[in-house]
Amino acid sequence: MKAMVLSTPRTPLVLEMRPDPAPGPGEILVRVEACAVCRTDLHVVDGELPEPHLPLVPGHEIVGIVEDAAAGVPSGLLGRRVGIPWLGHTCGCCGYCRSGDENLCDHPLFTGYTRDGGFATHVVADAAFAFPLDRDADPVATAPLMCAGLIAWRCLRKAGDGRRIGLYGFGAAAHILAQVCRWQGREVYAFTSPGDRAAQAHARSLGARWAGGSDEAPPELLDAAIIFAPVGPLVPQALKAVRKAGRVVCGGIHMSDIPSFPYRILWEERQVLSVANLTRQDAVEFLGIARAAKLRTSTTVYALERANEALADLRQGRIQGAAVLVP
Image (tube, rainbow, N blue to C red):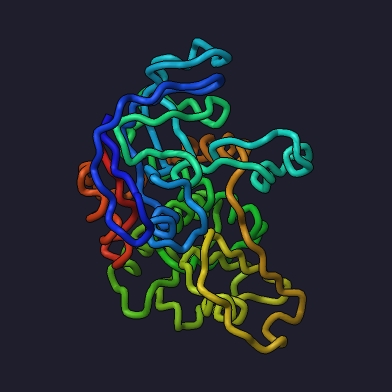
């Protein structure tokens, strides 16, 4: 197999030839058809997340075909197209797992972080954390749903039932969530980097009622705001933009420090929440919605060997929608 490997954070990935991995009990071997590039991959490669399993194959928005399965895996998975997300395994016995909050498991494994991921031609995954996909699903279009879509959906659930939803950072997750919001009859207000006319035009093309810079105030107060950009100063900005009892949801795994802000912008029962990882139930719900809403992803395709270029383009904000690696 081929794999793009991270040996040391803050250094380029290196293409390696490796023996095809063998699945262990309860695991499957998947031939990767497509793997989207997530901002979390940037945080891993750039050393902003602690203690990755090195050397590491990044990538956790994977779509592929099950080529082999070990003991304990239903035989019906062989030959099926599956999606593999960030949450790669949970212990099943800690208090969080027993209470239905497996996203907060005390002993998890994360695809492309603490176990090898999908920047490769093959990947091994826990079969219980791989989701069967439609047989005619487009691998490139579907790959971004495996994290950008799933986390966006969990963020929207945390945001509540409000009608006016602000999205700070209009990248892979926001361009998917904007479509969900419009399908649900909500209004989308898109906040981009100041002066990023291309991202603002992209948001409007997906039905955003308003699009402007993150330094601007929306034309009316929001019911909730979701922050996808890893920029701490956006938290007080978003608090100023939401109504009384409004919610600000932080959707990233990493964010720069949140600056101090006056209590008055939090007062009147505004809330700040964070979202961590996902549950398998999130995936079941969201994949059903993706089909019903006929979600379309905007993608830029890169060959596997161009993974460093894809990461650089994402880092510099040169991608509208999602970058996708295709072996």
